[in-house]
Length: 291
Image 1: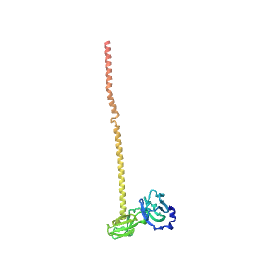
Image 2: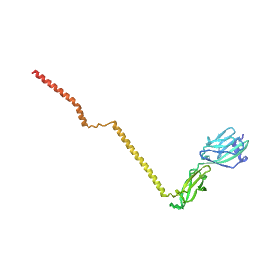
Image 3: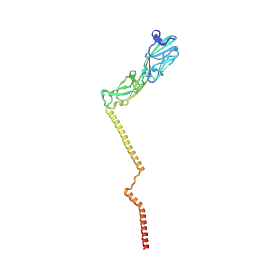
Image 4: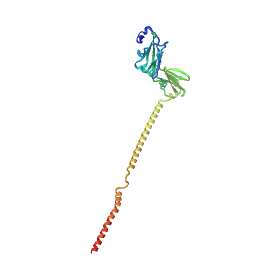
């Protein structure tokens, strides 16, 4: 069996070279590259920017490089399935097939792109005017962040009409006039709506809004700080009360305690005095009897 490595070398002279087809894939998702062949090939080789991706030699297949665990090959149709797409997967893909010693080669171009981000719309009054009078013209600008802006298309939609372009000139006659900007790439699209009343917001209004937001944030922070201080004080007070209950103080002063101690001891002292008196009386009686 003829090896595909040799087959690729002779491709230019002995195969039908078809035109290049363009495919798009979303980052993180998958894409299928399917060549148009009429019968099952004996050998298949896929390349990406001249580097091997996957090869089937008629018995077994081999996956190469960064495509390991991310590609599968249909051996009947030669279809290549790539999952978990990355930006670096973009580029030229080439498939070579050998069917009964008839060689064929096809090429494809793959572009891995992101989903379209949500667009934003801004309004610029003519001559930089910020007056609130009606009837002036303004320019609406639509934009969307993208790694590949060359694939983005912009459209304005109003009253059922569609106008291409990233900018739109309007007349400010009605505050509630609504315009929509739709941004598309080959696979996805996003739309944002805009009301003309937003064009009448002056610079001072915007500054005032920012000032009020700053004041509100400061007030919230102040409330949190005050609440924290009060909580700490209450917690400390509760701890002190707990210690006082565990170790109560004697409300009596030292002199009072001394008096009470003296009173407690006085019965004993009286008893001793009475006993001495009886002894003296007995001694007197004894002396009298002797005389």
